[in-house]
Image (cartoon, rainbow, N blue to C red; front, side, top):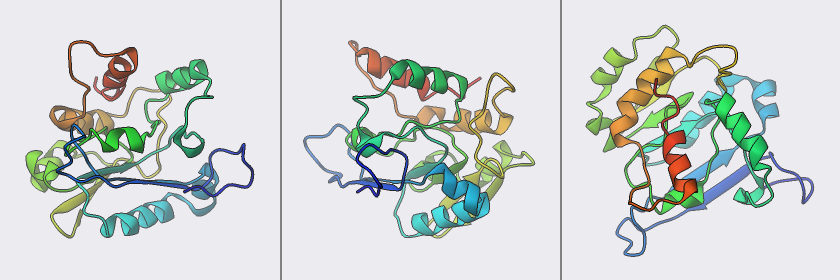
Amino acid sequence: MELRESPSETGNYQVEYYGRRLDSPIHDAPATTLSFTFPTEYLLEHGAVQLRALAMELARELPFNFGYASFAIVSSRGSWAAADWNQVESLLARYPGLDIPHAGEFSSRLGDRALSASWLTFLGQPLLGALGGIHVLKDALSFPDVSLLPMDGERLLVTLNEWPDPIDTEKAAVPAQYGALAHLLEPFTFQYSGKDLIPYESDMNKWLRRLLQ
């Protein structure tokens, strides 16, 4: 579902939902995925505190294993066929804080794994338990800008900055807290597997570990 003012417009409010049976025989590692997209103007008008509060309200009702919020490059209706990939790849190489969401692709493969460390990182069960629980996260993420907020149902919201950060690597290094959380998530981060990966899968495997130093 997408709300937009013209057929050619990209970047407005979008909702994507893919419901999967967890015991599906036709998917490798199914997971129901739900994605909300807000235009950057929403963040600039309302601020990071309100966007974080809204993300919290949305997450509160969801039985999530993993979730996140960050800046992203978004295509209209999830279609990348018309994208200028040279430009997209150059942006992703410079700004590792950007996401390139593909809820439909990962809904059949993600299972109970993670994707990457982000500005807001939501951790639920069983992933939070596999990471060692809240106390392990507190010890590993003892940075001034980081906050950890426990949620009902043995879940946790990790906030890495006051504001989302696209992370411009031409001006500064990847913030330490992003790398620290990425290292914690690494054993549980999704990877395409197999001997004969197509270029997209190999590139995605590298990109999902872009914050590791």
